[in-house]
Image (cartoon, rainbow, N blue to C red; front, side, top):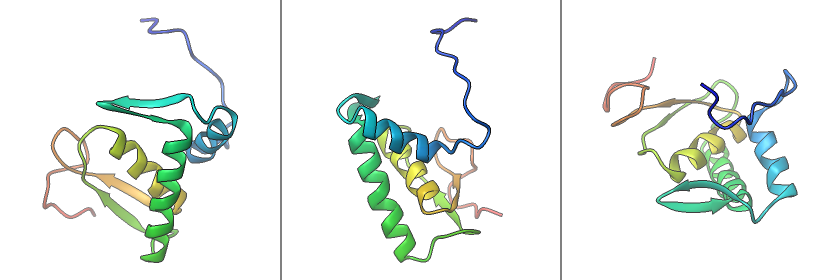
Length: 107
């Protein structure tokens, strides 16, 4: 299937949260996410940075596992990027997400 023909090669060491920050610098007002509401690249990056700072203040860092339980939408994108920017790892959980059932601890 040839969805929309936007396949691109990225360096093997490319990190998604850094690529998002670069895109936010290049096209800050362009729409990045649409899911009920829309956010620009700048807004996604700023919200993820705020969350990363908060998570860091809570002690999230290398080796930390953060449970993310939100519905699909812009909040999920921001949450996952925020965890990555805090140098943590995440596990999704909740309705419609593949990480597991609510109330089941991550291993």
